[in-house]
Each structure stands twice: as C-alpha cells, then as structure tokens.
Amino acid sequence: MDELTREELISIILELRERVAVLERENAELRARLGMGGGEKPSTPEWVKPNRQERRAAEREGRKKRGQAFTRKREIPTREVRHALDNCPDCGRKLSGGWIHSRRQVIEIPETPVEIIDHLLIARRCGVCEKEYIPTLCAKDGVIGKARMGVRLTSLIATLAVAKRMPLRAIQKLLDGLYGLHISLGEITELLHRVAGLARGTLESILRKIRGSPYAHGDETGWREDGINGYLWSLSTPELRYFHFDRFRAGRVAERLFGACFSGVMLCDFYGGYNWYSGPIQRCWPHFLRDLDKLVEAYPDNEGVRLWVESVIALYRRAKKIARRGFAEDVRVRLRGELESRILSVAQPYLKDKDAPQNTLAKRIDRHLGELFTFVQYYGCPSGNNAAERAIRPSVIARKISGGTRSANGSKTRTALMSVFGTWTLQGKNLIQACADMIVQAQSPVATSYM
Image 1: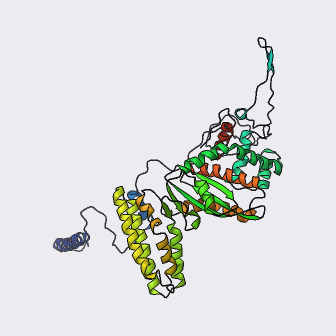
Image 2: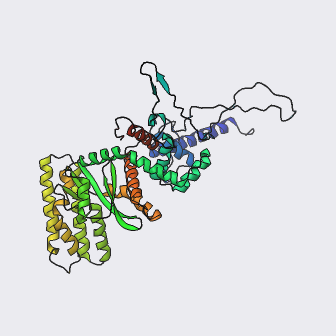
Image 3: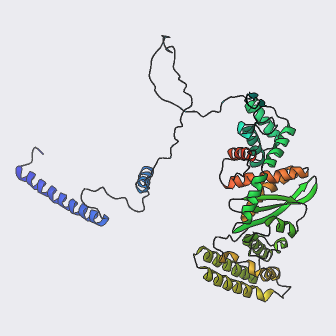
C-alpha cells in the first residue's frame, strides 16, 4: 500500500464504497422480506424451535399474573429454639453474641401423656335451708355419664373407628403409642355403643330432613349380622345420610324409611322394591347405560343393536341438555312428554319380538316410561343414583373386610354412627369437634340435635 499512488488509492476507496452500497441494499431487502425495521434483532425463522430459555421467557410473558404467591406460608411459632456454636471450630475460642442468620420451621406433635383429671365434688351446706348440696357433672364438664373416658377422647375414638375405618386393635395401639394410654377392646366397643345412644336425637333430625327434601336417593346392599344375611338400606341427599339395617329387602322397608310424609322425587335403581311410591320417581340412568354397553359387547357384530343403543343414548344426552336450561315449568313438562314419546317409539319395534337382543331393555323402557325423564321436569334433580352408590360404598368395603356385625346392637351402633359421621362429612365439618358438640348437647337439660 505504501507504493501506491494517490490516484490508485482513491480508485480503491471508490470501489469499496460501491461494494458497501450494494451490500446495504441487499441487507435492506432481506430485512424488508423478514418484516423487520431498523434497529431490530433478526427474527428467527418459523422452522427453528426456540431454546429452553426463550421458551420459558415467552411463557412468563404470556402467563396471567397471580394475585398471590403459592409458596408455603410460615406458621405462627409456638416455641422458639436458638442454635449457636459455643466455641470456634478452628481455634477453640469461646464465642458469644451473634445475630440471626436464617430460620427454619418444623411442625411437630408434642410428646404429651394423656391427662388424668380428678373431678372433686365439693359438698356445701346452706345455712338457711339447712341442706347439703353436691354439684352434678355433665358433658360440659368433660364427663359422659359414669364413663371413664372424656368427651374429646370419646370423639377421637369414634371418628377413627367410623370415619377413618380403623380396626379397634389399631386404635388401641395408636392411643398407646401416642399417649401411653391402654384401653381394652371391650371398653372401646362400649364407648361406641354409648356414642350411638347419644346420637338418637341427631338421627331423628337427619331422617326428618330427608323426608322433607325435594329429592332423596335410596339404595340397599347386602350385610351380615351374626353370620345371617340381611340388607343395609341407605337414604341420602347432597347434605344428609341415613343408614338402616333390616333382615328383608322388601318394599315395605323402604316405605317405612321414607315415610308417608315424603313427597319429593325418589331416585333409585330399577329394583321393584321402590314401586310402592306413588309420587315422582327417577330411575338411575347410569345403571341403564351400563346395561346398554353390555348389550353392545354381547353383540359386537350386530349393526342394528349398535344403532339402537346409540339412538337411546342420544335421547338421554338431549334430555341432559334440556335439564340444564332454565325453562319454565310448563315448558319442561312438554319437553318431558316429547322425550318419552320419542324413546317409546324407539323401543316399540322390539317389545313383542322375543328373539331380538333389544327385547329386554325395550321392555324396561316401556315399563318405566314415566320414570326415565323425571329429572327434565324437576330442575336440579339428578338423572342417576350415583350419590347413593357413593354413600354405601364404604359399607361394602367394610363388609368384605369384617364380614358384618356380630349382634343386633352392633348393627344399630354401626348404622347410627355411619349416619351422623356421613352427614358431617358431607357438610364439611370437623368430625371430632362435631361429635364432641353432639355429646354435649345430647346430655344437656334440653337435648337438641347437632347437624
């Protein structure tokens, strides 16, 4: 470059300027093609996947801002323990003072033995009446009759035995391990009988409210008492449960439980024990849908069966859509009649054809025609009896494990406790506190039910 003349250097500079101009034009065309303005970073082509950091940044930008963080909140401490080193780990010099560097919370249960309370009854003489008076203990004082167990302990044992379905031997070991308290199995059994006796007023209130509800579920399942087969009956609403053991599965048992004053919608399966009711009945559609599925499985190559089942299910789905709408009562009555007419026309061709696979279910439709779409007319009424199935399922599990109860008194106790604890669970109450409140109110001068 030192040997070039001035004219040669000027020509090189002009040539470089032309090349720069050409490159700037090409760059501008590429930016315009990519939709970028001046000063922006080049955009990534659509076929290039963003890396992890870019993807997380995009998710954070598009995420809805939270009103509060979901981090674990600190609890209010009940005790504070300070940890500090007394000597330097390196030179052994004694250390003192210091500051709080960090803290860590730990939740622990206290190692407290059971509390033994001596209730001393002080006798006092009235100087005017010249009589001696001794106070009377009640459940408010933590005493249940002549029982040795207090109210809170009684409520805990009943909750573990019924709501948590713990065996009595497991409850015995738990109390021994936690509190150093040994209770015999017979005493735990008598305690449960005592709680069931105190729940009499609450049971009457539960049954009375079920009979006055706009709709109620009914169901039954097998149960064994002293090795003899019987039946466990269940009545339930969204907030109430009632159980009853009986030797028979006859309709008169359901008639006695529902009572003459019940006038709401009775939800049940297709068992004939509920046919006595003259009021509105809603038969369980989930039961019927399962039978429809079984029919298709039994005839997988029969196109006519599949189409017939699909037509019945389509009517049910249409009924569900209508039931969710806020139509007036007269409109609901009319739509219910139309659905009943349409499903009857679907079943009509197979009512007399005994060789048709649809014959059995078609006869069921004809027999219970006025009880299939009751939920369309009564707003808020369910179309199935699943609530009763859920209510009675824990009893079925308990029957498979224990085999049932051993005496009539045991059946009465179990059904009573299942009723009150099932009701409290549906209502979202603290079970131990609810049981304690029921015991206190049952032994008050004017006993009232706690629900």
